[in-house]
Amino acid sequence: MKPYLLMSLTAVVSLLATARGAGKEHRLSWNPGNAWTEYVTEANVDLSGSGHIDHVRLDPVPAPGGSPGVDGGVVSLSVNDDAFINFPGNRLTVFFIAAVDRRDRHREIVVRVIQEDDAERNYLFWYDGKRLTKMGYVGNAPCFRGDGTLTAQTHEGFWNRTDNYALRRDHTVKLVDRDFYPVNKTSYVERPLNLIPRREDDVDEVSAIVPRNHRVRLLYADGNDWYRVRADNGESGWITQAEACTDLDFVCLP
Image 1 (cartoon, rainbow, N blue to C red):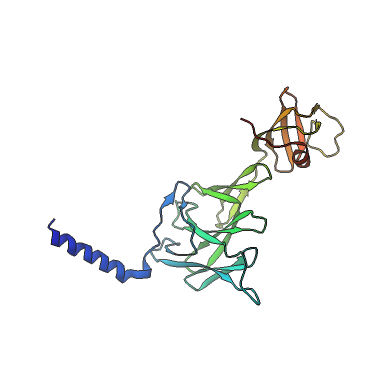
Image 2: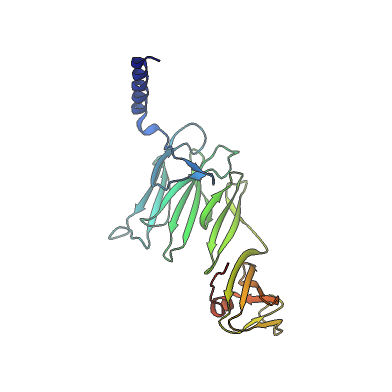
């Protein structure tokens, strides 16, 4: 191609891009988790798969007598300046775009809120071209598989629980119940630890006593404050969340 033709083509492309202006979609790379790799507070994106570029914006709502602080307040999520949802947030609140299910045309808005206890909560919203609807919320570091399922982390004090969620027909996300969650943490015992045979508060029977300074491994949890534990000598049983937080030092060993 001749140089002047290449220059003319470049000029035309540049002119078209300038003419389209804010109508362009906010182009960001997608990570393997079917979501944008960047957090933003404003973007142009086709949310409904109709080919129409929607303007998504997140704004802090000033509190009476001042502006929202980092530790609390309200934020407003809007699409095209005509669909609004207000919910608890602060100046650290941002969003990204995800594809919960790549088999449909929709892209979802995921708003990350850092709460007062520093815990992270991610609110999901979808837009059908007219209405902005809340889908639910999940925990920290959501990962979208693109098939209508996703995972998120919930901090349990000394380990992160992985929760599974699924997209329902009404376009809400639902927590998928599990019997047990893998923990796989090793710790030294700081005071004699009683292992009981069943997950019951009123059980007097003790299946084993682990002496101080011995190691135990927390195998899995039931999501209801019970942990299955195995000691170095092979003895196993159950302990409560309270015992795990007071009787173990949580030094994770290889």
